[in-house]
Amino acid sequence: MKKKIILVLGPIICLFFFFSPFQFISPEADKVIGVALWMILWWITETVSISVTALIPLTFYPLLGIMPIKEVAVNYGHPIIFLFFGGFVLALALEKVNLHRRVALGIIKLTGTSPNKIILGFMLATAFLSMWISNTATTVVMLPIAYSVIELLINDEDGFTKKDRNFALSIMLGIAYSANVGGIATLIGTPPNIVLAGFMESEYNYNISFLKWMIVGIPFTIIMLFFIYYVLTKIMYPNKLASFEKSQEIIDLEMKKLGKISKSEVIVLVIFISAILLWIGKNYLNSLFPNLALSDTTISLIAAFACFTITHKNTSVLAWEDTTKLPWGILLLFGGGLALASSLSNVGIIDMIGTAVSDNTTLSILLICSILIAVMLFMTELMSNVALISIFAPMVAGVALGLNMDLLHILIPVTMASSCAFMLPMSTPPNAIVFASGHVKVAQMARAGFLLNIISIVLLIVFFQFVIPLVFSM
Image (cartoon, rainbow, N blue to C red):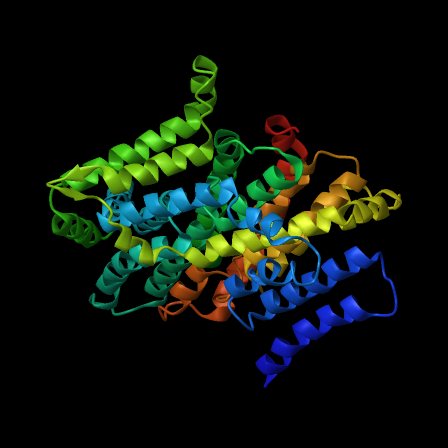
């Protein structure tokens, strides 16, 4: 019944703004506000799929006279969407040939056999994979390996003691949290990063460089991994277990199952490394060959194209049928978010927010930005971070304009905050997956997560003040 009410309430709110005898801002702005509130209500409650909600602008903007369908449709075919599409295809290739599992096991094998080093190994492997493939897929890959290690403790001589439970808890939470922060490191690591990049390119004609993002994202991820490891193993859930060599046997057994590296894995590895090198060296290549016009999106599509066309024994790494596993709905979600942001900008709502903020002289820039980071971080505990950043980015841009500051200086930490959800199982898929393992209780996740949320806010404020201004300027 609640779903049915909200399903009808969204369009009613929209129609109220459309037919209201009162003018709130302007006739054009009122229409956009009505549609925006409809989308926000459905996004927050997930009454229908968030990807379906993203189709509202494409369907109703032309009908309501807000924007012609040709102008709306441009947002759904934005270059940034194809950058992420290429990233999805590359991730799909890594998964299909099992290269991601080989890399993960290799990292864990290198870290050692003491319990805390095993936890660290799982965290590093998870974070690295999450930089390139979805955090959900990463967690699903890591969990069976973690189960095998935990089984050793359950079946040992002294049974499953409190120390053992703390180890299991740390390894599970470590995987979930590392999957969340790992995606922050690269532009294609998590959807909110791409939403921001698309918003900046479509509204302000500014291209966020893949390399520049990594210069900020990787240090943040590394520092957060340190805090996650320290909070879990030293403060919240120390295990104080002795070294157990059998864990190494499990890793060796899993590696043995994979067998020798196959030709398909080598092909994907070469494509993967080549894409990374091109993303890093793009500007240098463009300076050498001015007519090349190499972009992050082009590189991503070249990598995807290579996965479909390079063959081994008359078979390509990927067939088009494999794309049924791609999260196409996320690409639609980007388009809907960009269309909403475009309409908010066109009718002057972003400028209005900026003017309102600039007229407020009571709060300092640092305090305002700190509040925005904290609000984003705690709101993302309750709703989809992609939908949230789609709603929040235009508003934060308006605030930045009102404060007469560089948009990226505040938009980047706010976007990063949307991926720092540590407290609740429903916050992110990795949190939900490890919670379903049975080794994590909500209260245990909330305790560690709240502390990590506070640490994230402080770290993001430090990056806002000192790091991001050194790397990004418009």
